[in-house]
Amino acid sequence: MSLLLLPDLPGWEGLFWLAATLALYAIFLRLRRHFNDSGLLQPLLWVSALLIAALLIGDISLSRYQLGGNWLVVILGLSTVSIGVPIYDNLPIIRQAAGAFFVAMLLGSVSAVGTALVMAYFLQLDTMIFATLATKSITSPLAFGVSNEIGGLPALAMGVVIITGNFAVLIGPKLFALTGISDIRAQGLAYGVAAHGIGTAEAMRQSALMGSFAGLSMGLNGVLTSLVLPMVFSLS
Amino acid sequence: MQLVAGILLLAAILALSEWLKISAGWTVPAPVLAIVLLVIILLMRGAVPTGLRRVSAVLLRHMALFFIPALVAMVGLLDVLQENIWPLLLIIIVSTVVPLWLTAFIFDRLAPRLDDEGRQ
Image (tube, rainbow over all chains, first blue to last red; front, side, top):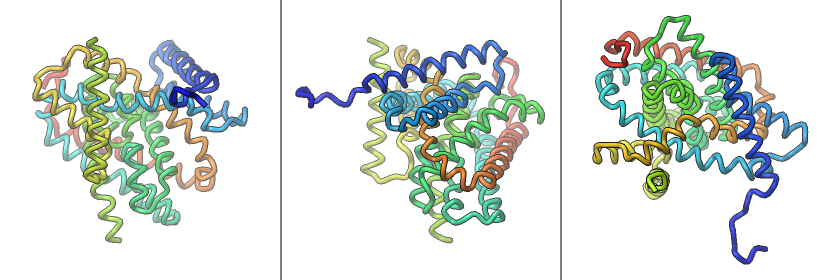
């Protein structure tokens, strides 16, 4: 019992996992650079997979990891807000393509929710999973709340959102090369709609212009979906 | 000092957004609200403060790092995922590829071209 009433400090275990996360992230940044920016070497994906494996093998509970990991979650919040800076910088370029931006974002958003729901219906998944999938193209914190509201599983919604984001970032470069879409504004916009936060993080890494399109489409798409979905599900 | 002011601005805007969201009962997430507030503040000010510019550059370059704990938390979801793994994977693959391509394709067709320097 601390007389000073200090908050819970991470302790050696928390600090160990925080250090392990940073070290693995640094290693994979280097590896990716070494292999010419290979899209398959996403640090986010590999570091998380290795850490999950370590927790499972060592039979260590998630709460132990989070003693350290939660420090990064706080910074994620600040990092998300700072998307506003490149959006502000690129506002003139975004304005010039505003019409195309809205049409592409709306149709892309409808196709994301639509394909998921139509397939869930035909594969006869139960209603809980059905409602969960409806939230799949919104940012993770938002998917959590909306999934709750329309009767889905919030935890599964987070998982689906995260797998979706990683998958989109893995296949994105190949898909855009195959279909001959080289406009970085189009790519950023698509990452924002289909791959939310994780897509925006990747777009931001590639260029500020791509990142600003991703951040804006992620935000607008998230707002629209969070307003529309609860209405649709209360009607059905 | 400038760096501290930059971090303070981000934290203050985030706190204000959380408060606005709770007191108004909106379904819009606080971070999205915060991005909008930051853009409005920058528009009113007409420039990005030096400290904020430096802080945001670092935060944005390493955004993937800050997502790692969210992915690691999926360790608690492995059971639910395993039960429905094949239909879920199939749905995720199709409903990721289609909007990723469609969104980029429509924008590419409708938007005015960019030249090599990123200008229209």
